[in-house]
Length: 194
Image 1 (cartoon, rainbow, N blue to C red):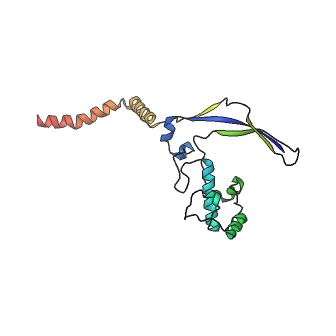
Image 2: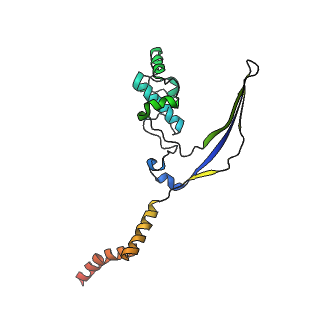
Image 3: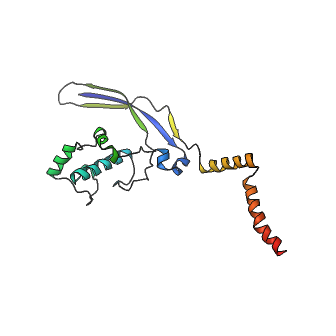
């Protein structure tokens, strides 16, 4: 068999302000933002899928397959023969995304903020001489585009916008707010002393 795969990579860059946003707003997680349910030391989309598969296996069969538990963890015992039959019956021998969609409420994996997207451009398969396998994988086109994730409104932008609105409609600014506080505190105390 001869198999040829050609893929394309879309590069992704994050602005520094993206890290300040909550994960629900930016719709991704960085590698150091590991969920509490995970047994992995870094976050990635594939690690999250493995965690979800392991948790569903534990819930339905009271065991997990050894390849979904890379560390010796007493909380997640390995499956015996009976456990393997149970896991096969629920259809989670491998972490197939289509099978995980049946348990949609249990698994909400966000994409990684730092991983680039790989897309399959071309794939072919030819059968030649039996017993011989040749696989050819190539990135035929270098990345042409680089996507950038950026924050439209930071906390500083909100303060500046609020100051602009106050200045436009009330004729006030941050300096006049400080003067207002000064007038009714320090100056009032100073006038009472005199």
